[in-house]
Picture 1 (cartoon, rainbow, N blue to C red):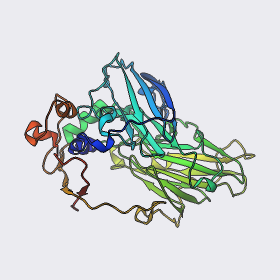
Picture 2 (tube, rainbow, N blue to C red):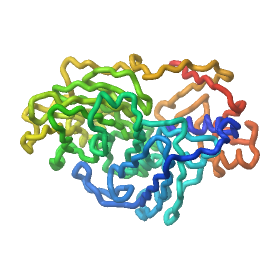
Picture 3 (tube, rainbow, N blue to C red):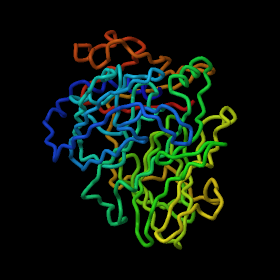
Picture 4 (spheres, rainbow, N blue to C red):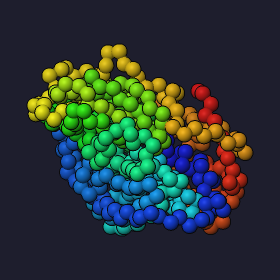
Length: 424
């Protein structure tokens, strides 16, 4: 919901920009097909109808190489009447040109939802040599809570940090996310009625989890070989939960943050908010054994959902030659004396000075107490009947051309914008 407010506020940035008008010549075109279907799954042992991509949760990896163009065919095959049956896809963190903004995927802002039974082809050229760890998810309301989320990785054949790791492939992606036994429709209705944000039933690690009193679903196992260095790409695909990642007896060297290569930083604990992504290097330098990968989470008052036991969200790091068994050490929340990541200490690998702003915007974010209402500059966003971008293409060019509740800002083309978020 928060993302919708901000998407609407900055749509004015998507006016035609001559600097973006040059044709993009892809190095190669990657064709992907996602059938969005309802599937009966039990990620944490509780079976429910799930909205999936190609029948799996999380969805399949979309693997690209720097300079590729993604051509993704989405076939909407949703039929379950207890959940939303229209959908739309967002490629979280991927850059878009002005001319390609209708492929960005925000319903009622840059595009229309895809109706059940319909298909749409997203064409997404990778620009500015963008690489790194991203994810895709439904952008319609809070539909991705029902399962439509998956990893998207743009590999760099010329990665300047490649000398720090030996293995980086489809088997070294860690996806954590909150999991819910009720559908997003019911959860959102409860939030609107009470103003109380729902609390998840459990968390999942690469699609597997447990809830308090539920069946002992096997933990995800990450296999490693002693002496090898692994680049693990960690994605928090939550709607709400904040996960804290650590691996017993192992350090983690951060080398990428949200798609940006960063100067290597050694920690042993990383707190990740919803949507954040980190690449870390783990050296398998401990005795052959099984080790806990800890992923406890917070997200609201757990007394509101007695299914929740955050210590059950975890996985196993298994060295080759170790027994097929859980670690013999107890489950913990992480290291007793953590060397925790301090985000302010992160530095990009290649520093770039911020340009001087031509326009300053101040956005005051306020949540109305006791209500399901978020405000940006005293405006609560409401989806327009006609998508905002369609209005732009039809000639809208002043604030009067948009609904007040679209919260649209009109700014000069090719401008540098500085956005300030005042403290509460």
